[in-house]
Image (cartoon, rainbow, N blue to C red; front, side, top):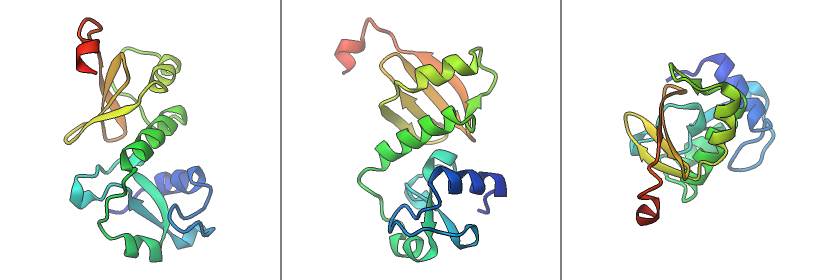
Length: 146
């Protein structure tokens, strides 16, 4: 799927114009975007699942699943919210407050129709680079769950 030029430009700048795999500095015309968690393995078509790659590394990676894919996706999710690339859709929370509580995310709960990120107090349901639902985790059961 072709990415919008603005999204590609954002990822290019976010990743400091460097291939995430070999560290080579890239010109914009050399850029390939790679699904960090491959689409064939259930990876979403979301900003937080794309990394900058040179074409050679993208081809060599194929559909390999990096061991650290969850950590990378969490970090990129936090960054995209901070940068205003992922926003709330119809939820009643100010963007500033959203940015604060997103920084507590430490886990990916699910990857499917929605990608669900979790902090100790909230679950965030994300689809198409928008947060559609925030659920407060019941503190009464928290100790048993963790």
